[in-house]
Length: 304
DNA sequence: GGGCAGGTGTAAT
DNA sequence: ATTACACCTGCC
Image 1 (cartoon, rainbow, N blue to C red):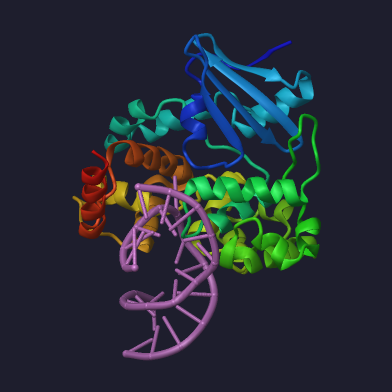
Image 2: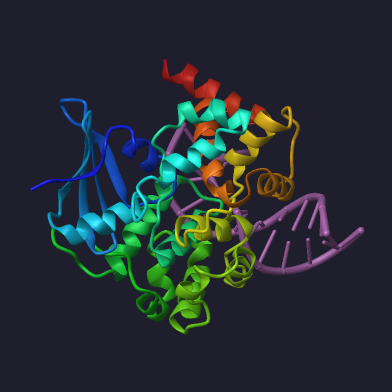
């Protein structure tokens, strides 16, 4: 039994999963060209398929899972919210030009605890390694699910873990941060349920008290885990995109980017951020240092 | 072998 | 209030 999550054009699964919001998905294409994706949403091991007719939830069957999945992809409780939001953002001429390139990009609503740990790990790191770290954490400390997968471990479980257990998950120097975060959450000092309805800045100030959580990670937790649409995470890609698209390519400090975004997009800044990020990664390549360009040239030469 | 990768903490202005 | 630096680890 399959359940339709979204109609044609409402959600681009591959684009959304490739946008660096979540780290527990694998996806690709099948023989017919449809996108197939497998991932973990809470305690559900989810299988998705996107073809010309829309997005289909293939497993697990059952209405509860469909509702949880719809909420995760931002399609529920208000299916029309994304369309209205993007229409509003298109009033900005730059975004009006960007949005056609980023259609179907969703802002995920993840478990805030999982988002917190994932983005603490993301600091000074790269995506393949973040994925491996999160997977190892789940395998080491998470609850087993059907099919050999593991749920993301609870804060209580991580709080009790040995540092060497966390280090074995390739966390490196972030291991103590993750455990400290777990203890703050398990001890009730950081209550995500209370942060969601709170004023954005107040919630942000709370998150910043967690070791390993700085401005960027806090904004990721707010946006991807707590539904704070005004949060505007400034990473290297967004800074690059904003600099290029709004500041004539001049370098801009992260703080200036954030202030600009807040003034320009207000409560929709986070959604704007995700589209700028997606556009930046696709169309604004990184600027390689001379040393790196030299190395890559050497490798290319020796490999030919 | 050295720099880099979705930043942050810390110590110095 | 801003500005250098170091940093686990795997990869090129």
